[in-house]
Length: 314
Image (cartoon, rainbow, N blue to C red; front, side, top):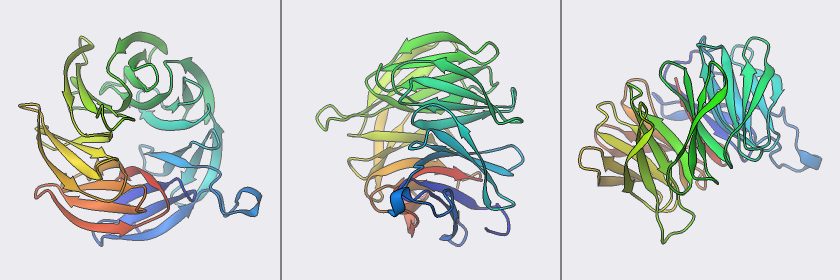
């Protein structure tokens, strides 16, 4: 493990059950955390966990990974540098959110159409909430009172009241809502609608979180996956798995403002705390692309683990 967690990016590698630890000052992978302790299915080197997404606790002591193949969450102690617990949730867990307000971990279970709620102190399952078909991404409101859930199969957004764990509202958005991005104030929600048809293409749905009404829909790319806002919130950077680029959407005029070519099948995208770099995981290239955010220029493609997906910058 690295000496400190400054300037570090964690990337989950679904194809080999590891987490890459990348130092983005040195622009290289420092080490990998083994999640399955070298165990493989029937002695064949095949992933049995499939880590998809990563979250970190408030004290930066524990990492959590959703394991899509094993229906569980791995808890990694960063001091001991090993997995210390596994938590059973629903089928094919994908994304997580940690709520400081309730000291809970929310998990979307894509194949069981539910949200699991985990008590972070006891690491026990508190409740399961049924939502729409194939929930994928989840995001907490800035005050922690709402949980937003994208339902890929039912083309909807579920809003959960975190005080009561009841569904507050279900909003019809557009086809295949996949990932979510909130602005700093938490007033605007950007939904990435992916596409499984190169003819149809993808889009971004923009919602007002106060009224929960759709304000606009902007077509962009062929297979958009995930998005992140720049510091000024003037542009949305969106990975496109079909075009192998990061599309840039100008939010002022709702028009494309360029694209940055990355690796093959880009998936997750994130930025560092100082808003200097963008990081993109490329599933088919097994690389992490580092982009200078201000210049819009690729700095390096860093070789990491197999089928990299979720990215966490600290």
